[in-house]
Length: 610
Ligand code: G6P
Image (cartoon, rainbow, N blue to C red; front, side):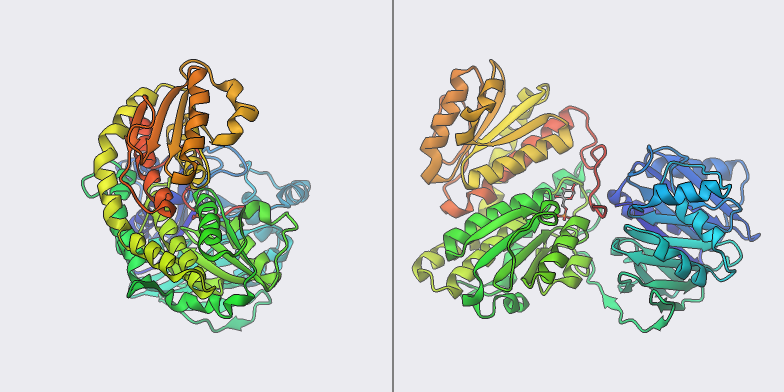
């Protein structure tokens, strides 16, 4: 998490850093800061608790007070707190005691307590509770007068993960950086050099950038030159990566919130994702076909991801088993890492991630590769770390997603997984007529999604008015509807702060039913035809205990309660449609409760710590 931006060149650095932070704010937004080499050779540091707007106010105040903020090099940081509260003191950049080194950091230094003890014993006074501050002091303690050599000596002492941006007091036009496990990019453009944790901050300047790999360091000069080094300090030649421009602009397009705009964009995102995969009524995965070579050798498909991506994985598991007959499972990437899950060369590991940077998913990919699995990633951000390290990549084409709570990227993931499942089915010789029928329905999904969004908006808003003041809500479903229930509950809790839980409808009676009292809201997802009667039975059990029942279904009025009716669709596509009104429900609940819809408290869009 945390966003890093660095610039050195011929332009004024302060506005470039602030604009870069704006584009990175989704990575974390509890405090921000910047360090700037001023014209007189001084190093100015400005930090503020809270959103970027607080730092902008601080800059304005300084200017009004007559401060000179002219300068051509500096670093900026937007923080997602790990060690220490989100205060000004804990905001980056952090500085060494004598001010020789100034650092911004993304990641976690796992042995920071030990290092801090050693540094304090050597007489160093700490100004923050962060793990990052130890890096600044350690660099100063080991200072050789050559920052690169100092970094080479200091980095082996750090355990954990880092993307580091470093300024050295005596070299105003130079940026230093290093990476282990957390993403970091460097680029040069006509106006100088840039350093960023994510391509979004660099794209306004250039599409060509260099991705630092684990253990690498770089030295960036204001004249545009960048030098790369390995962990031993040996010079490296690196190939640049070309990033396609985002297809969607980072503006709200007339909507009040990005999330609402992104919900509305889903029909186009589905169409864009599916178009390159569909041809002549069949699925072809293009370059990703490489992961499916010798399909008879795939004995298991394992989906890995975090948060919503995990829910997409659960849906993917069901689709793969139904359409291809290959045993499949879905695991949380963070749990997979500590479990002894059987994975071998007969496993196809499918890593799902919108950002392509989620630390747990990246580590899960590495572990799956180590165990010999073939790897295929379903990724939305081109050139991201997971995309770069996967055997094959199946891109979702949702475009830039800004709201922290995913909507359009999730839908695009489901569509890509439908295509993958159908392709596996075809390669494994499953009934062609059944597959053709599915693919035909899949091709019609974008239009159906458009219809559902238009038809359910008013009901979702009305339900939100009823739900906005509750403290708890339960979502029930079986099979694909259960996966939707999980995603619906996550959406509601992450943005509206209403406690929401998803239950496999049949499990309710094994404990949770005791929590259902008169008035408790229960949303029953009844869309997969084969399980509707049973889910309805479970919904009746809740109703009998006084639950306030809301039903999402594609049957005509199966319950006397509030019903949101979806159009008929292929039984295996219900998850793609039912989630749409549930996104709208969460959105309206959060909006009615006055929550910060696009930037929910304590969360971040790209989670690059484990
Ligand atoms: C964060 C976001 C979630 C997202 C998860 C996985 O927790 O808040 O919305 O589902 O990360 O992100 P990824 O980029 O890997 O899909």
